[in-house]
Image (cartoon, rainbow, N blue to C red; front, side, top):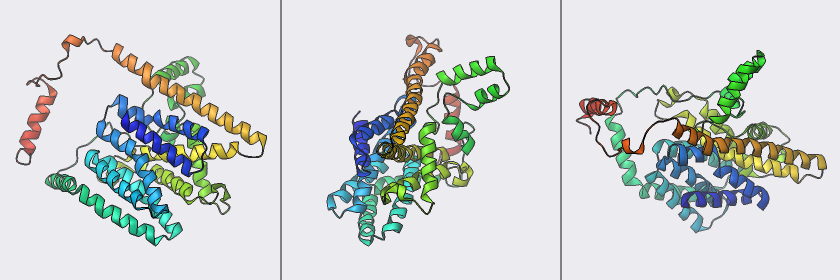
Length: 362
């Protein structure tokens, strides 16, 4: 609760830095709280180290912006502590992915602003952050070098994304099987596919919502247009669009190109994070337009998006959890999480195999 509250507070602070008003900032914060990474890491997987990284992302992003914009010492000192704390307590894969995306954002800002003083402050942040987590980095690197020559195990269950798959994921509750059924006029099969897709949403996919995905993609196209007054000369907003586009592209790269050390699907987190920010900015800009039709259009877009997210959240938080519990005929008296595995368990065979293979190293 503390980490989520902290993340929500700084997410709203980031919205304020983009001149997003209170109403749209609160809506954006709620969408962040009920986003697929939040549901994935807090409830479905209960993955504490990744949850910490995800909730630290808004905090680090906010103080990173403040460090680049202002010379106040407190900003880069807090940023240093946050980075060191996150590296020491989070999953290394996610630290690298989030860090790489933020580095791209920072490089874009520095390229546009040519702020030498900001580069100096960032140098201090890097040096002090490394000092804070030096023991942890030494341990991680040392352990990694022990297995550097080992072939990385295959992970057949890991998803790899394509543009078409990302589009299908964001059409929830529609999916490719339902659409194919409708195209071939198999209505009964289409209905069953629809119900199955509706009640079993996945939180491990890059689900941003079709409206926000479309807006973010449109903003990415505007970034390369000559007449980009839409960004109101906001370097920060442009950098967020760069962050969205970079994380989208990096999520499409097959895992083998990362030497199977990173999961490309992890880049969906910064994609969703930046996508929320630039999409809510765009909807507010439509709302503040002088044309009544634009205001109405902004409400329609926001209404459709909230309806889609509400359906997703309901079946992710309530229906799917209830179904998963009711589908297993396991009595509480049969469960003993403290019992050691015996020779008939798969986990026992796996541990013995690792002991024979890595015994000298572990």
